[in-house]
Length: 156
Image 1 (spheres, rainbow, N blue to C red):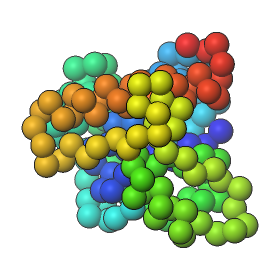
Image 2: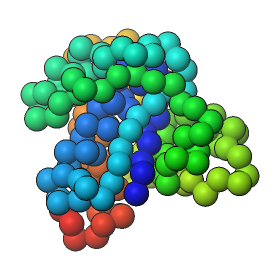
Image 3: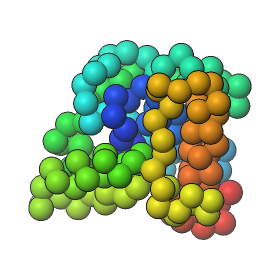
Image 4: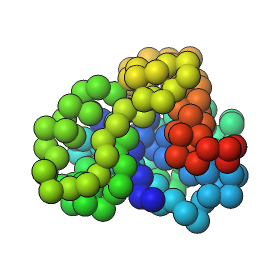
């Protein structure tokens, strides 16, 4: 399975979710079965490392964002990924409005199957303080667990 996670600039939410989902899948013995990437709907930060605050909060919990670089979503991502996870409703609307009819990729909200935040958007912590980055990581971790349980029941 090929999974792409999308936020606005690809420096806070989506790279964090990429690292979390990758580690949790690897820990569940599924790392070789799934390819994960992330992108932004906008090219504000192409080629840049994730936000230092996101990286710092993530490393405290054992997630490494150091090899991730921001990139902008491309039209061929619809063909290259089986599942595209949008971090919030605006990303989902943007992705749906541009999706070619011929593609088989599924577009869903990252927290679609969440137990604690079903169907909610993951808020953008960029303009907030450290607590916002911790809250976002909490939501991303729980969302990753529920996604893995949805796709691979009894794997965690």
